[in-house]
Length: 85
Image (cartoon, rainbow, N blue to C red):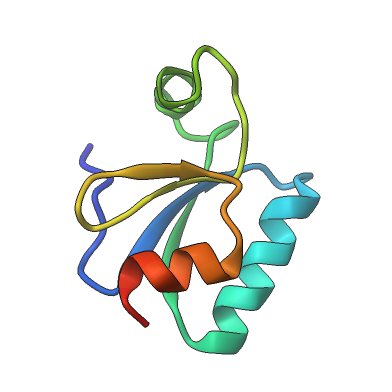
């Protein structure tokens, strides 16, 4: 499965219990920034992908941007800057 998002949006790997994920989702929604959320505990292969992006750690939120780059636990300002919003 391809996880690179459409322009102007992000893909967010998360878990239901992650407070940082909940905060970022709320901030993205308040700014009208679209995202696709993928729970790494429910979607096969995604925990391993997150580990690969984070030096062996299942750290969430892990974000993938439209250019294919990733970020771990970025701030709203970081996401907005990367998306040019």
